Length: 116
Image (cartoon, rainbow, N blue to C red):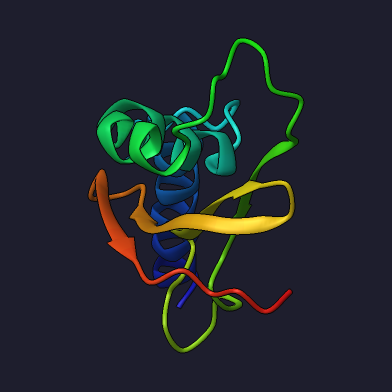
């Protein structure tokens, strides 16, 4: 019985050491905000749409521009860890929005919600 217990302890120790020494399976950069990553994807892929919805004279107007990034719902039954809604607002009015999946690096334009 002592022999089995010793073997069990040895295997448990090996598994713990392997887990501590192993490299993370994910190569994600955990120093960058996932919200910033969602914005970066929109900026990199949606320049044409951004220019269409913001056709003002960028160099001379004084309108406020906001970029809002949020998860569509809390992670839970459905994993929303990598899902974000990105909305562009000009002077408080939503002018464009996208659903961004940072895991798949996908950006899909969605219908603008104007609740304001």
